[in-house]
Image (cartoon, rainbow, N blue to C red; front, side, top):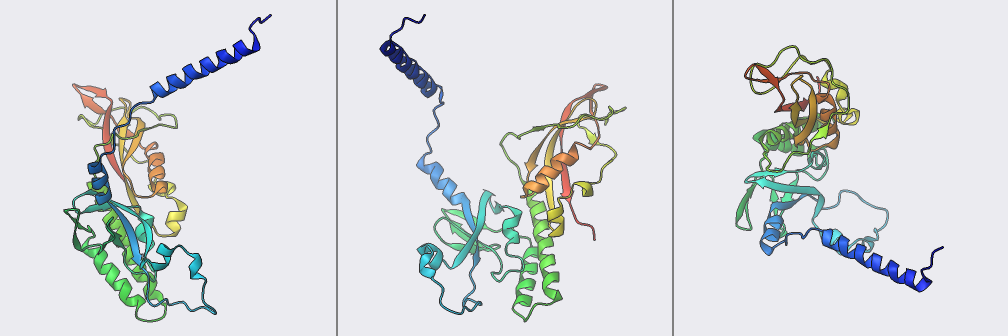
Length: 301
């Protein structure tokens, strides 16, 4: 029989709770302070991707809209915010593919970057922000395609040319994204995903060097192309870091250059599991090693 009095049990419970609480508090690591300098640099490297609202409004209404119900900032802002871009190095910005795609074929025209101080800079122009030069990294092909699309949008009612110009701009954006993805370098440790399926038959030979080499392709990348993106004619490049064991099997893979689309990134990880490799070799013996592979999702004509 338990001889502890109710009040004693309550006191014991309070003591135990206090000990557990103190233990949890002590177990939480101390976070480094976010200094004003870190905040300043972060603000300077973060941009809104914006589209200029058409003026005057091309849409007419039967009666005035109750615009007073909208937040004041939204009512008075001359731009529509569609996403965020980050400066990863001088003259290079990264954003999601769907952010840039929002402008294609729309009435808003080409996207621009808005800095933390509110200044707006068309992609491809130069500016001074927080004492750092910022300039869009769009290729000439992107600027040319944008100008061609804007010209046809302003020229009259919709026709087949609109679709052709929009497709050309989408292709130019995809090409630019590929260039940026290939050029990206990160100091962060890759987040590897373990293999989800059994390894196939072990390789019978090595690559003859200290890096693995991809072998015969058994499964076409088309089999893994996300259907929704294919229907929208969206393309993308994913750069993976893959760990290949001494048998030529990909045991882990990590996205080190994102396409900007989770669907493409996930599809690339699934596809690379089907790839066979000739393992790396050292001193005449097959060894495990790491290499990179560019997985390019391109539509066939």
